Length: 374
Image (cartoon, rainbow, N blue to C red; front, side, top):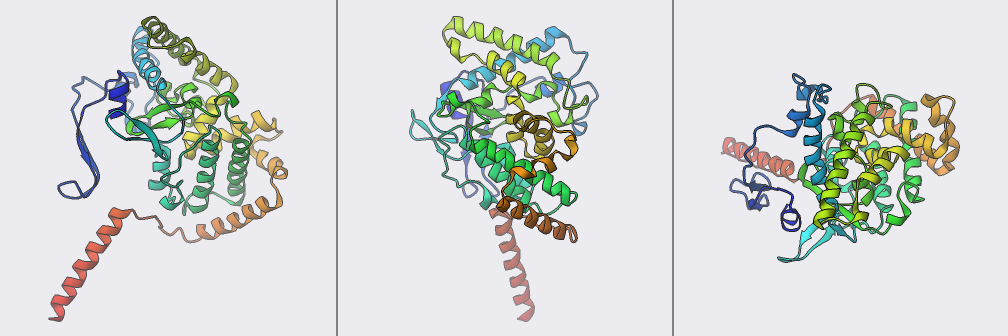
C-alpha cells in the first residue's frame, strides 16, 4: 500500500500503523491500522442485482443503465491501468529497502494460495519457499501447478468423488504443468518481464505478477466467478467486456494525452486478444484452483491437445501423454484418496497461533492438575 501511495495516484488509505503479533497490544495477530474512507456504497452493491445477497454470490444487474455501467467500469479501468504501469525484474512480493527503494524480495502470497491453506488443507510447508522469487513468466504457472498437485494430494476430505475423478484431476494438473514447463502458457516476448503490480480485492494480496495477468480481462465484470456464470461457462461475458474495453480505451487515451502512459502500455488491445485467443482462461485457471478442473477440460485442454469425441471422458484419451512414472504416481494417489474417503477424518495444518493456543491450554491443564494434587 505504501508503494502504491508513493508511486501511483491510486487512492489508497493512509497507513497509520502496522505490526506483528508480538507488537499488538493483546498479541492476537498481525495488525494494520488505516484511515477510514468515507463512502456511500460499495462497488459490489452498485453493480449487483438488487435483492441478490452475498450468500447467493452476486449477479450483475442486467437492468443497469449503460451510462452508469460505463461510469463504474471506467473508474475500475483507470485503477487497473495505473496498477499496470510499475514494473519489476522478478515475480513476488515487495519489500521496502529504504525511503525510496523497493524490490521483490520474497514469493507472493495470493488469495488463491491463502485459500488453499485455509480451506483446502494444504500444509504451509508445501508453499514455495518464503524467499523464492520467480525470474521468468513461465516459471510462475509451473510453480503454481506443482502447488496444486500438492493440494490434490494433501486435501484430506472432498478432494475427489471417485477413482476416475481423481485420475481426471491428476491428468489435468500434470498436463497443465507440462504446458507451463514447455513455455506454452505464456507469451515468449514477456518471458523475462517486465512484471507488473497486481491487486486482488484486498491490498495485502498485492504482488508483482507476470504481465499476462494485467493483459487478462477482469473476471468480475459479471460479479460472479466464471465457474458460476448463470448461463454457463461458454456465454455471458462478451456483451459486458465490450463496454469495459471501451472505457479502458478512453482511460488510455486520456493518460496518453497527459503523458502518464505510453502507447505500448495500453491494456485494452491485449485484454481483447486474451479473451479471443483463450489466454484469459489460463490466467483464470492459475488464479482459481478450486475451479481449475472445470476450466481446464472445457477451455484449456481442447486448445492445446485438440477436441475429443467425449469431453467428459477426455482424460482417458490423454492418459497416453503421461509417462509410466506419472501413471504409477497417479494410481498411488488414487489408492490413497480412496482409503481417505473411508474415514473422512478432520485434518489440518495448524498455524503458529493455533499451536500457541494449544500450548496455553496445556499449561492451564497442568496448573489445574497440579492444584488438585496439592
